[in-house]
Image 1 (cartoon, rainbow, N blue to C red):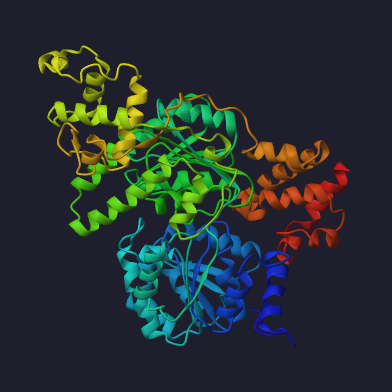
Image 2 (image 1 turned 90 degrees about the vertical axis):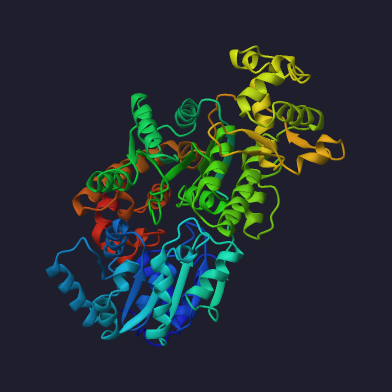
Length: 611
């Protein structure tokens, strides 16, 4: 499409496409280097955080090179929105997947063969069919982009077996450049992506994993749903967000709970009827102010830029999963929140799930290591962002925008209370769950304690100076530290590990996080509303709201999500700069030539009307 721009090198041509097609004034980070490398025929492995602009890294080279760019995307449900967004800026795009009729498939295949498309999206399963491979071999292909490349990792949180077969691209199309992209990969996963996709010789581009606009907070779980409600109504009233739960049942119950309390919430999980699940996803993407309550089945490739918060009511299995899920907040660069409620039962449940899984011992060991890292993030006394980035091999200083930076936790020498706990577990023969052990420590006279004569033990009542919540926090932390294990029997009995021995004998001290009683959140500037109040004057805010209202009508007319027309950041810049002519509007970030033609007159009319 833009293969010949007279007298210009690749760098200049790429910038021209960025500005005229996509409407952005300049590349960010290492986008320019990636685009130039791939446009000149090089292979690349790109690690870039969600919202960092990964898609431009293959879209622009596809427009600069002769032929059709093929994008391997794992989710059929999102291809339509990606194609809609490209068509809005004048890029000739289409997809090939099982939702199409045979006639529609033939039409798209014909456009690929005749070179009348710039980009075509395919699922990996479709790409592996002989028909599809034959189609691409008989066509001029500009590049292959493998999105969500971490799906190739068997150790990863989103493993997709069909991704492993994508090495065939190197074998059958040796002269076509390939670019693999992901937002989530530690060094082991990076090496596995390179090896499995035969990208060992590819140039690697690793951006910072930091998302400074996201505020991370992890709170002690007491009443998870009530805490979630308080968080949303205080911090993010009227905002779009995602709430992740571990089970389908909890998804349904949480969505019902939020709706009962006046928050528009939709459920999403793999057990729902396909049409209902797809309908809920479409509503979330196309409407504003909806909270999606989901299992981790929801989210990969979600491009909605104005998700203001991501909450977890259950502990994720790994830091990779947590980072991927929280990364769906604030893709537009505006302030956003990542909030989690976490308690003892989360630790017990995750440990049991690993023990009871049918995986081999090697895989279980990897899962345990990943869970330990996740627990370390939850229990850290230092900056959460430092801990998160360190996991991905990136060094940083305290961020000032996480709960442990804003309200530093108090640590204390917990050696004596931990010794009391370990002794109580031992004295009840390592046959009882946390609740019973805590009752023994606190000297609570229950029917079960009397039945087992545990009120006659020397440890009965030795921890009566601490509340049940304080002891639960201590139990949770010693499990996280590996001093105590949870048996996967029917009772979730607590067992001492070898690591407990030096603590019991007084040879090792234990430092823990002091339990702090949960407090109801207060309004902060983490929400989009707070940002607007700071950044826009009263008159600019009125223009911004008027533009948002207009955008909703334009999106309905074009049959696309509102953010595909313009993102909030673009409307906010228009409200601040108040362009009264098409020439003035042309300079606004996010307004390319096609959108200027489609919407320019409307926007300039609104500005002139309100001045």
